[in-house]
Amino acid sequence: MAAGIALHQGNLGWWNIALNLLFCSAIILMAISGVVMWWKRRPKGKLAAPLYPWSMSG
Image (cartoon, rainbow, N blue to C red; front, side):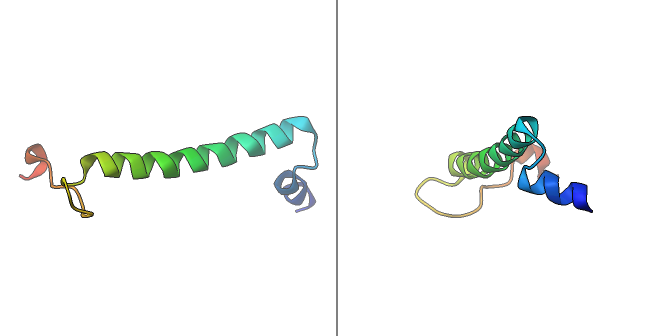
């Protein structure tokens, strides 16, 4: 348990801080890219869910 706390707080050296920074940056990038992908697929002039692709409609 003590090692987990040290990893979480970044107390194990520069590599631990770099790993935490990389992890946090990846989370932020995924959140931003999700909004961008939704924005590009949304119906024009609406804030709604994108239409279902024809190839997946069955």
